[in-house]
Image (cartoon, rainbow, N blue to C red; front, top):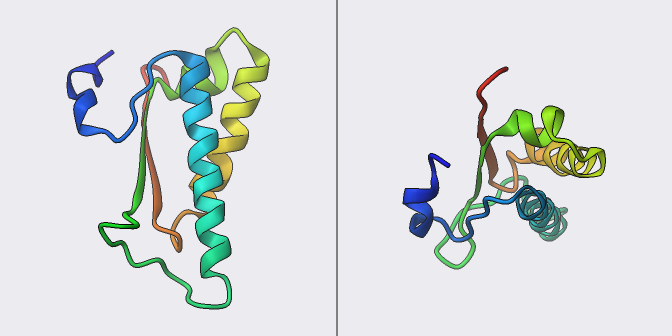
Length: 102
């Protein structure tokens, strides 16, 4: 809700839970594809206008991963976030999140 006024600043903005999860999955796939391109060539992506850093901003992280009512969506969100959070440095993929109740 709080990020909606700035939606035009993002390449992609989602507010429905299912679409937010799909965005996370797409980001994880894009990060993995970048890793595949870098493997054996270099250990770090250098961001350019054609291939910028991938920055994912998640509002309501707790809803996506713990409090949401759909267990399938919670699992998909966690599965998509895991590689972004643990393998994102070299391919220049960064995730930031906000939540109401940690």
